[in-house]
Amino acid sequence: MEQKLKQLEIEAITKINDATDLKTLNDVRVAYLGKKGPITEVLRGMGKLSAEERPKMGALVNVIRETITKAIENKHHDLEEEAVNEQLASETIDVTLPGRPVKTGSRHPLTKVIEEIEDLFIGMGYKVAEGPEVEQDYYNFEALNLPKGHPARDMQDTFYITEELLLRTQTSPVQARTMEKHEGKGPVKIICPGKVYRRDNDDATHSHQFTQIEGLVIDENITMGDLKGTLDVFAKKMFGEDREIRLRPSFFPFTEPSVEMDISCKICGGDGCRVCKQTGWIEILGAGMVHPRVLEMSGFDPQKYTGFAFGMGPERITMLKYGVDDIRHFYTNDLRFLQQFAVQE
Ligand code: PHE
Image (cartoon, rainbow, N blue to C red; front, side):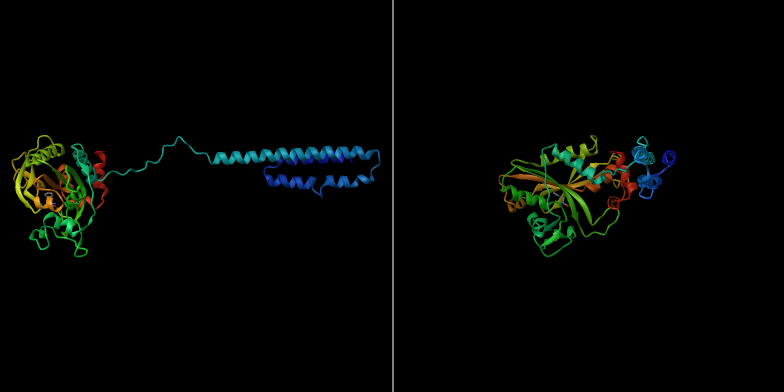
C-alpha cells in the first residue's frame, strides 16, 4: 500500500509538472485529491488496516496530500504568472515609434489682417467695440443722418427683416451706439470690426456678407489734420513706409466733409497698371469729420466736440496686401488657399 501511495505521488507530480494550462491543472487536482480520487479511496480503506499500521499510513497519506496540494498551488501560481507575462508581451507599446502628425489649423487670413489692424489701433490708444449684426433701422440709418426715404439709402442694398429691423449694412451703427453710451462726454476712441451684409450678387469683388472695420474719434478740437495723420500712420504700417496717401472728396451722409482715401500703387510705383486701373492710386477706405447732426442725435454737443470716422473693408485690404484676386476665396474654405497663409504665421 505504501508502495502504491508513493507511485501515486510520483504520477501526480509528473502530471502537475506537465500541465500547460490552468484547466489541465484543475483536472489533475480533481483526479488525485477529489472525492473519487485514489487518495480518498486509501483514506476510506484505513479501517481495514491494523491499529499499528493505521497512524503510519495516515501520516503518509497526509504528507502525500500536502505535497500534491503544494505542487498544484505552485504550478497554479507559475501558470498565472506566465499568462500575465504573455499578455504583457503581446500588448507592449513601442513608445519610441514616431507619432502620427496631427494636422494643425491656421488662422483665417481675414482674421489675421483684422487682428493686425486692431493691434495697430490699440497701439494708438483705441478700444475695440462691438455691435449687433441684426440691427435697428434707427442705428444703421436714422442716427447716421439717413432718415427714411433718404436717397443715399440706395447706396447700400439692405436685407430687411421687418420695417425696423435689418442686417446691418455697415459697422457705422456702432458709432451711434457708442456715442449714446458715452452720454455726451468725450473722449471716444474706438474701432469696431465686424460682419456686414448687403444685397449684392456675389462675384470676384462683391459678397453679400463681408467685414468692415469702423473707426471713431471724438474729443474737443479734433480736426481733419488728425484724421489725415492717423490714416497716414495706418497706411504706412499696413502697406509699407514707402506708401503715400491721398484724400479725395466724397460723400457719406454721416460725415462732413467726407473723403475717400487712396494709397499709392506699389505694383507700378505710381506709373499706372492693371491693379490701380492706370491711376497710380488704389482706393482703401471712406472717412470724414463726424456730421454735427450725427453728434447731436447721439447726445454730443457739436459746439464743444468734433470728431472723425473711417470705415474700411478688411477683404479689400487683405486682397491688396497678399495679391488675392477673388473675394470668394475668403468664404469657400479651400484648404489650398487657406494653407498659404498658415506658412506665413
Ligand atoms: N460706412 C461707410 C460705408 O460702408 C464707410 C464710412 C465709415 C465712411 C465711416 C465714413 C466714415 O461705405
